[in-house]
Length: 285
Image (cartoon, rainbow, N blue to C red):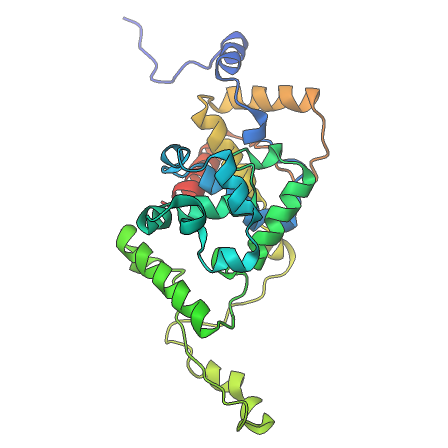
């Protein structure tokens, strides 16, 4: 009796093309060529919320009219949490549950359209709003908060402690120090050494962050490539079918890809690692 090989048969070109036709994933979901790398954090936040498990439920609340109301709020109104009265009525718990989804609607009234289907003006405005909002972006490791801002931030954080399992284990949770300055009495001799004294409060085991140079200092746009790989996999494509899809799309829609964002990987193993990284990026585990 002839031995039976345990190796899976390589799919034929015909089978790969058939899989591509069957899956037919929307390129707006995975072709990130042409993005502005300065918008990366906003893009990742936006695309992650497009995968939010509460999104189908929120669609009954986030009508086109409500999204316009949210988007048209100025930055102060949005920061002051006026949204439950503006859009959702007297149910702040429901509003808090959907806060991040609502926040993306403040960035862009066209949410949940894919980022890549937005025009340049909408992308730029969403990125600007994201960066300007302290709660969403955490854009600086050193921030100055008013007492009212800090109270709102901590109240929202307490809500997430109740809603999110293992919230306290999040390695990104900040350690906060409250600094009070009496400007009427303080002088420059007291204020100048302030930051130097803060360095003495660095917790044990935490070392100064080293500034990277070269490739390590580059904006990590490869995360978009990993997200693209995961979405192609989720659409039902294996490694070979994904390559066929990408190449077919690239030929018919040529766009400069100086950031190397099309999810073409040199081996099935590298593709698999990218898919896992893309899922972790969205799911957080």
